[in-house]
Image (tube, helix red, strand yellow):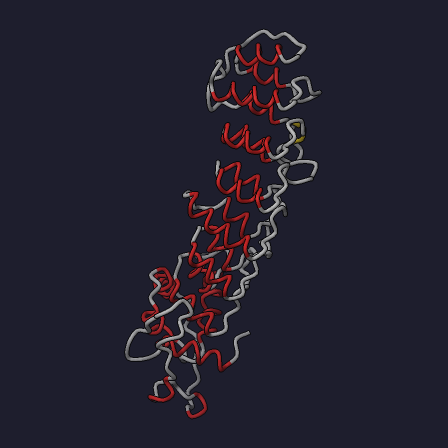
Length: 359
C-alpha cells in the first residue's frame, strides 16, 4: 500500500515545468516539492473529484509506450491528464484492471514490472521512491526482480537488489530470479555471469529446484554456460543437481543438449556421478548421462569426434554401459555409431547389435 506522502514524492519526479533529471543511481536529485510552486492539485479545496478514465486500449498503449521508452515526462502528462498527480497508484491500478479486461497483458503486470522488464531505470527509480513495493507480484507471482533477471538487465538487477528486492522469492512455477536468469532471454554469458554474481552476493538459493526439478547448475549446463557453472560450483552448488526422483542432472544436460566436453570434464572433476539413472521428466524413461551422450544427434560418433571423446571420459569415470534399463549400447546402436559401440564393448558392454540406419 502506498501512503499519501509517498505519493507526493512520486509526483515530485513527474510533475513540473521540466522533465526530471536523474543524476545518480538513487534518483534523488531534481525532486523538488511542487507544492512550493502551486503545481500540486489540492483535492481538499476542489469540489471535483478525480475519476479514472473508461477502459481504453489506446491509453493502455500510451502508458506502455511511456514505460518502454523510460519516458518520465510523458508519464507525467498522463498522470496530469487522467488522474490527480498525487495518485499514481490509481493509474497503476487502472492499468492492471484494464489490461486484464482487454486481454493485453495476461500476466497482469503493473508499471513497475514493465519498467523492470524493459530496463526503464528512470521510471523504476521514481516508482520505488514513491513507495511502490519492490517485491510486488503479478498474476504468475513474478516480481520486478524476476522480470529484470529473465531479461539479463545487469544494472536493473543491481538497483532492485539495493532497493530491497528479495532474490529468494519464487514465481508460480517455482523459479527464483536465478532460475529465470539462466532460462531467460540473455544469451551473452558475460551478462548472465554478472547478474548471477549479484544474485549470489545477495544469498539467492543456489540448489533450490524449480517445478521441472531444474537447479541453477542444471540450467547453466543446458545453456552451455561454463563460466557460470564454475561460478555456481565455487559457491557450493550440488554437482548432481536436484535430489528428486526425476529431472536431469547437470552432467546429463552437458551430454544431451550441449554435448560439451568442457562441461562434462568440469562436472566429473567436481564429483558428478556418471551412473545416476532417472527420467528427465516426470513419467519419462530413465536414462544415464552415458546413454544420452550415445544417443545425442548433435555430432557424429566416429573415433575422435566430440561425442566419442565424451563417451570415453564417462567410461573412464566409471560409467556403467550395462546399467539395467539405461543401456548406452542400445542408444549408440540405434544411431549407428559403430565406433562408439566398439568403445563400449571394449569397456565391458556385454551385448552385440545389428546396426540400423537412423531415421
